[in-house]
Image (cartoon, rainbow, N blue to C red):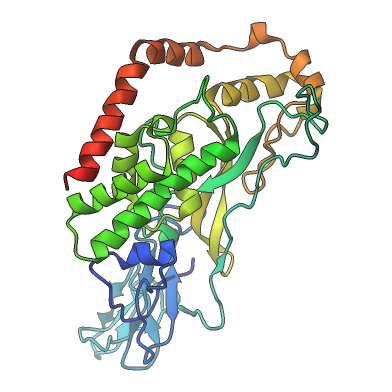
Length: 374
């Protein structure tokens, strides 16, 4: 077990500095005091193989001896008849007096210096999806490689140290619409829709920093959404709620994109992997996904891949490097659609046919009212 925490004196911005760091505004999340070393500690308290859960990291505490004390599983030392203190969890752990005062205490978890043992962070996935490799002939036929229902590898991070313990994979409802019969047909366009919500969140944050109330910030974000996107491409009211909930979380742009597509039923989760570690101990997990252009694409990919020999033994790649390619025309023709259950998609079509017009108009009106009535 190791212990992880920042031995810094933090000066937090009460008006949302956490998001400023994520959005890239150049405002630091916190300012460390140079008088203190960067000693950290972490412990796997729930025995799940990592120290990525809340409460498993802590700031190391300075002591009168100049050593550092990890507060995780800290216990008071016991004095014998001669007044000598010993650690009840083991004689190998030193009894230390904190500079803040109090009786001697000890911890089974050791502190380490970030200057010599920095935290290793994995960047977000960099998968642009299938790139066009050929033009279109006079008859409209693709002259390059054809992939059917291709996707893109993306990740979102559950609650952990890197997200300020916000769940950046949280399901917030079907925000991005499936786009059946619309121009929202490619995964690149779906990602653009998701990025539009992120742009709206930036506008909300700028308004909030300028002194706006939460309601006024929401209106600023809604106005940015309407300007940048066709409201019929996403559920505007859900997008605004999503935007405001994520506003002060430590989620980055890919977290938000993935969460929106995932909650809209367009993603297959491949698995989890470590995205932030210290001395080989995982501090932050991430969930790797293949996200597709429609829910139908995700359903056919999930049930079609096991039918094909070309995918045998490696259906989805790895959580860190998902394999999200589309079907070749030959593979698609080989699929037995009698074995593919499309009931999930049929239910969506039926529900959409009954209410799509009312919902779209309602969202347009709601978005407009939110924008013009702070």
